[in-house]
Image 1 (cartoon, protein in one colour):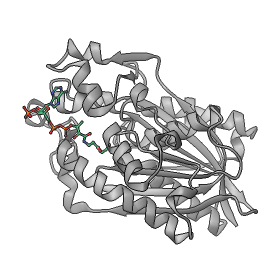
Image 2: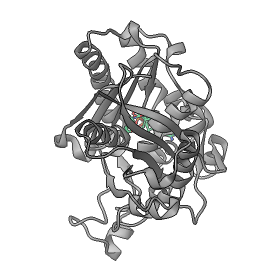
Image 3: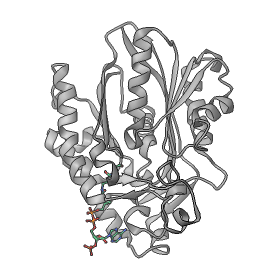
Length: 325
Ligand code: UT7
């Protein structure tokens, strides 16, 4: 038995922020952002829009495409680091928004790897038979936690949500493996120091700008490039497969140079890599499911294709999923 993704959906907020717009906000240039990141524009949530609102939009699309009743969903797992409130879980607001009254709901925080972590939990539950129909969503409103005075980070992030619905399947197709990894010794490479039990919110944490995402970009970049090739090769090797067997690689969309270096090391042409970074920026846990949905909708993923999802992010965390579609 294998878990199967039976449908996908995604949502991007209407408002677009271009690199030219950013030139008016910080000391940067369209040219620098494109050359160093590959990003041209990103979608930005409206002031009232929350992570669960966007998750609901993506989830409704996935539910409609699956042709299922919302009552049949028995578990909701939401991957986010930008939930509506510290308590309760954004997944509970999502449950209420879509009216999935028979589902248990909880969040997972594994930063940019969050969607794949959530997928690994869903996969394990389906394989044990404990749950039968699971909604997994990655949704982020990173731009509300972005320091618009910090040019090192504010040019990188965007908002959005992506969703999948999973069921047990009985053939050979489905999730072949999901692998998750962490290294907490590098936790401070990408973090938001304020607002938790270490630095609860005070006037000082606010004036010291501790409630914004901070990243040591260059160090994170180097670890990402080192790690991602091995991540993909290991997952393939466990299944007696090699990079050339892949129909499509769907990477976390953080930086075009990371994506190209990974593809290069794997010997995969960019025509076999799903890229929407130029339009979406880095949407953390939403990035992989948005890219997956766009790949499915545009016909780049067909039955029997072998696809690899991979991500790398704060924690540090990294993860992959190998799927026979
Ligand atoms: O999604 C989770 C994981 N995240 C990632 O994987 C992201 C990993 N990191 C990156 O994508 C890249 O490191 C960045 C895009 C964040 C930065 O690129 P970089 O090539 O590593 O640049 P850098 O941080 O080494 O900075 C190079 C120069 C610096 O100037 P000096 O010190 O050499 O004079 C920066 O101050 O570029 C400067 N700089 C900028 N210049 C114009 C940094 N940000 C900007 C900017 N516009 N927005």
